[in-house]
Length: 149
Image (tube, rainbow, N blue to C red; front, side, top):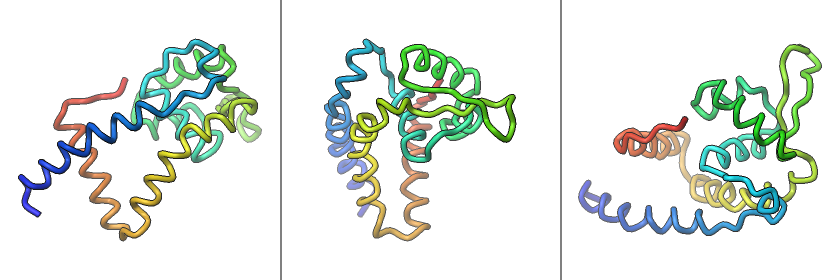
C-alpha cells in the first residue's frame, strides 16, 4: 500500500473511529455527577481500570503529563466520589488512587468496549508490529501538534 493510499484510508477511518468513541454512552452514575469529562479523564479512568490502583506519580508517567496535572484531576474526581485515595501501606507518604468501588463496574463497562476492540485489533500482530502501530499513532499526534495538559 502506498503512502497516499494509506493516508486516504486513514482519513476515512479516523473520523469514523472518533465518532464511534464519542457515541459511547457515559454511565448514568457519572452523568448524575454533572462532570465536565475531557479525554484526559477517560485516559486516567482507562489506566486505573486496566491496571488497577496506582500512585499519582505512576498515573502521571503513564498519562505523559505532569504530576500536578494528575493531582488536580484526582482531587476533582475524589471530591465528586469518582475516585478514592488511600495510604500506600509500604510508604504512608504516598497515596494510592483507585476508581470508587460503587462506580468501578460502570466505568469498566463504559471503557471495556474500547479495550476489547484494541485487544482484538492487536492480538494477531507481533510485538514489533504492535510497536509500529503505537509509534504511528504517536507520530500522528505529534504531527498534529496535540499535547495533553
